[in-house]
Amino acid sequence: MSKIAVDIMSGDNPPEVLIDGCLLYINKTNDDIIIIGDKNKIEKYLSYHQYEKRKIEIVESSEVIKMTDNPLTAYREKKDSSIVIGSKLVREKKVAGFFSPGNTGAVVTSVLFEIGRIKGIKRPALAAILPNVKNFTILIDAGANVDCKPIFLLQFAIMAKIFSEKVLNKENPKIGLLSNGEEDIKGNSLTKDAFKLLSERDDLNFIGNIEGYNLVDGSVDIIVSDGFYGNIALKSVEGTAKAIMTLLKHKIKQSIISSIGGLLLKNSLIEIKEIMDPREYGGAPLLGVNGEIIIGHGNSDEIATYNGLRILKRMVDLDVNNIISKTIRFS
Image (tube, rainbow, N blue to C red):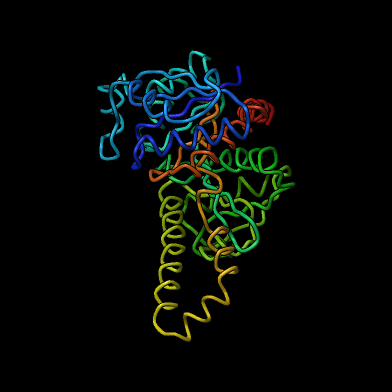
């Protein structure tokens, strides 16, 4: 079973926006998908579009988990939500992968209860894909685990390495540990102990501690962190990218000379915007669970949904979490 499912109900954008992403995906790939949501609304919207009917199956959900909902409470009280139903479809092996742009905590909670962790994995982790000045950097964990132990960070590195090599075709990726200085002695007790574990592994291209500016300078391929600081780093990078683009637009409009300069640089600015666009990868894979899962940005639109499904299908075809399982078992 290589079919994948998509939750169109839980994001910040209207369901129709995500359905557009689903249509773009099936038209470009010719793959089958399951759309989870309000069946009547989905059928009505699809009736205005031309597509191969057999490529889309609709699964009804009557409840929606909101971004503001408590994850555990929402999982327990909203069993007919699109997030819980999507997790169940993976557990029942009706689909091999699930994409949701919903409440991250709720998706992680639902996946853990319905699907469970890979045997041997202490904690699953979110692997956010960040653009940098060269190509991209994987940040793991990006928010699934606030409190971590050193062994968790070692496993995060192993999982990110597999994802980077298999899905993103990055050979022998450089791995760095996020800390407050490059020196071996820098960091808190967690990073110091994790540093020792990472340094002992001959199968990891561990280059040592890295700092915040290395998130985007392209010097490292994988950045390992606990979910607390990792999520802060992720939001900081995303916020900075948005602020830079906003400032550029504002400055270009300030004078005629600036506007002329903006026109001359138009193509370059468009390229920069595309490079910094988080929609390129569609979301963050949740690695270490018994199924392929991608949690999209809350504001996922048509392009982000398409790219999220595209990466998810590649994870399914390559059986990424099975590779992780075998690696952990024999490591």
